[in-house]
Picture 1 (cartoon, helix red, strand yellow):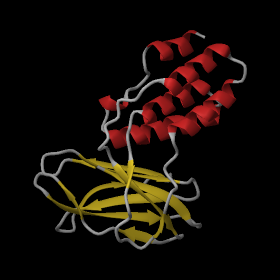
Picture 2 (cartoon, helix red, strand yellow; picture 1 turned 60 degrees about the horizontal axis):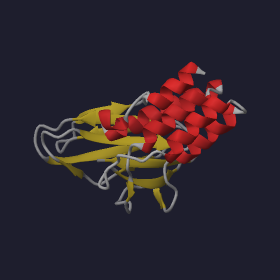
Picture 3 (cartoon, helix red, strand yellow; picture 1 turned 135 degrees about the horizontal axis):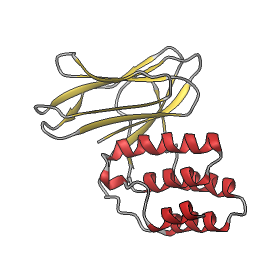
Length: 203
């Protein structure tokens, strides 16, 4: 499988070339596409991308949702397991998957942080203002458990909307560059009919 072998020789995408939480979003989308088409190469590429991002769990601060402990966002290991199952007896693809599994990572020890929450249907989770440095790229990423539509909104200190992601999925990403150091308010809205568990990640 020439395409599979090309993944082994040169990564399809490298997380260090992207803002880390954009890499997380892209890996989730790529993995979902791979699952839908039962394509082990796409799932393996998603795992490789996610493996390059180091995350640290922190205690949730404020908000209306229920904090959950010990349930991390979907890991690259689970993505690779799914890719292996989809690969069947394709030895070339299985070799690529194993190469990704054993390869070292370049993630830094002080990467983005995440917390896990559970949010009821038709509710909005509003976080206390979070500080971001002026001139530096800021990111917020929400990854749900697949149970309902989640929307993301970011407001500046004056209450102005600076970024939003309101598509019909439970994956949402906002990236912006503050002109000055200030605090921004993050809101997560559950538009669905059921409770959803989600990870909120930020740099």
